[in-house]
Structures are given as C-alpha cells and as structure tokens.
Image (cartoon, rainbow, N blue to C red):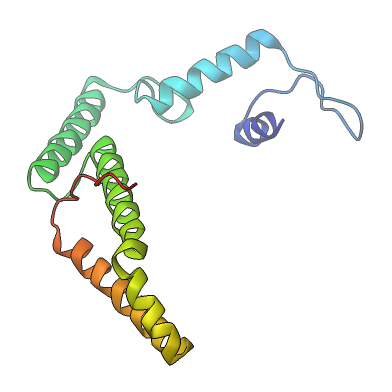
Length: 152
C-alpha cells in the first residue's frame, strides 16, 4: 500500500480518488503507460516530461555511465573498493578465527584461574583481561584472517 501511495505522490494517474475507508480507483492502461514512462526515464531513455532524449543527450548519458563504470573498476583495482562477496567472505573468516581463538582461552588458562581465584576476584579479572587482550592482539596481527582451528 505504501508503494501505491508513493507512486500517487510521484504522479500515478488516479481515475477516482478514494476517501476514508474507500480505495482510489485507477485506469489500468493509464497506470501502465505512466509506469513504463517512469521506468524509461529512470533508465535514461527519456528526459523530463517523457520527451525523448536527443542523440547528443543519449551519448552524454552513455558517456557518463561509462565514465562511472571505469572509475569503479579503477578504484577496485587500486584496492579502494572491494566486492561485496569478498567483504562478506573476509568478515566470515574474521568471525570464525575470533570464535576459535576465544574458545581456546579456557583450556589455556584453567589452571591459572584456580590459582588466581585464591587471590580474589581482582586477580581472576586481571588474568581474564590479559588473556583476552593477548587474543585480540594475535587476531589483529594477522593481515589475512587465519583458518579457524578446530576446538574440542
């Protein structure tokens, strides 16, 4: 329903406007024509008011799109941009490596926690924070996320 309301604001032809509790009525052929014109304008086929673009305007629009595409390719090659799939894969690898490293903490400090517990909560807290900081430094030191190790 929100889409139709937005389209009405954008100029969708209304044959008979509705009111509270009454839906508006539309002429299907007029709405289809309006929608097709709107899509054509969005794709650069026509100018404002539905007028066809001149050949010079079409060339300028095409040149602009080509320039934008070339700029994106150059920025991608320079490493200024990354593909969405690559970023998602890297994020998943980081999450997996982080999970694996954090899950190793209990096994690596269990005995130390028992000793620290005799010294009080502050000692346990300091030990845990130290181990977490070590894990974070280790993870940050890897430029490329390492493959997660299997944790039993």
